[in-house]
Amino acid sequence: MNRSKTSISAILVVLVLAGVFVFAQKPKRADEQFVSYIVDTKKQDLKLYWKDDQQEIFKSIQNLKSWLDKKHKKLVFAMNAGMYKKDNSAQGLFIENRKLVTALDTTSGAGNFYLKPNGVFYIRVDNLPGICTTSKFINNGKLKYASQSGPMLIIDGQIHSAFKKSSTNLNIRNGVGILPDNKVIFAMSKKEVNLYDFAEYFKNLGCKNALYLDGLVSRTYLPEKNWKQTDGNFGVIIGVTTD
Image (cartoon, rainbow, N blue to C red):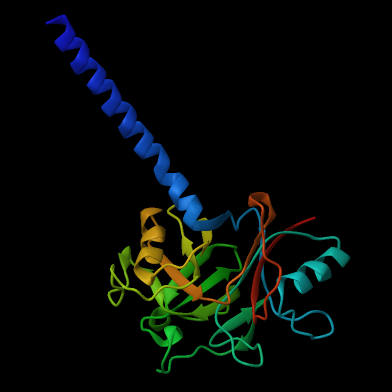
């Protein structure tokens, strides 16, 4: 009888430990699949960069970093923003320092950008971030930065209806979401992933809205996590700096 109780107790301990182990592994698996960075736009200096003082397009993260170094600014995070055209100009809306550089694109077409609904990531002049669908976007003159891309990943808490869980359309992908505390999370897949699984990552974090930024060309610079991709040939680049 005692042996039986001992065996049952041992089995229960093993099951409990196994459950704890599985639970503990979930965040690790996410970290293995995605590199991410959370920004408090009320406290951190997040900007959208496109051209330098000589009106030359940065294109690469390295060019941006070198330019900031000369201004005694330390680049702590960078990632390509919304999609861009062959001349490295923004595809769709781009607002820089409250100035409208490129107008909102409400047309239809082929490719991820036009997989409706697409949307806009923006920072208001009071530094509050937001993401909304293109159809709901209103430029009220109180936006500091904005970048349009598509498709939306999460819309009002729901994964984009066009995404399929079993899709074999795999690619490197990066995107941005708004967390429940109004902080911004940027994420890029380390490995190829489909749009559904990428969107699910943001949903599991509690994002009510999230926006796809780009695919294969995507790069992220995040030295604090030993992730240093400084190449690229982009349009707009997202950057966070410190003095």
